[in-house]
Length: 120
Image (cartoon, one colour):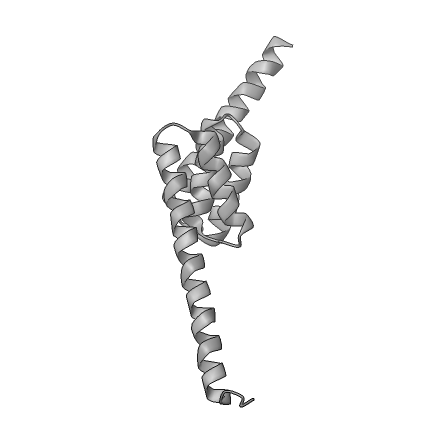
């Protein structure tokens, strides 16, 4: 049996790798779009799951971390929200929306802690 030329094997292998990468990119894009749609429909839990899935798949992006932080904030999960806002700021320290939201949550938590101290 005659073996295919080495160059043909290399071309087919590279083609398969590129097709796999393209399919993965399309898959990541579709997950991101689904997450955004869920968020805008008020389905914050679904949105958070999908943004978190992107991070588990290795996506390191300021918008994904910011959106995940915002979804958690809408769910009242402020600790998780802070963690993802801080992650977004490590990627892009000047991200104004993240800075604003993080400051707002911290001020809210400080007020709540102060009020709890007065009631004790």
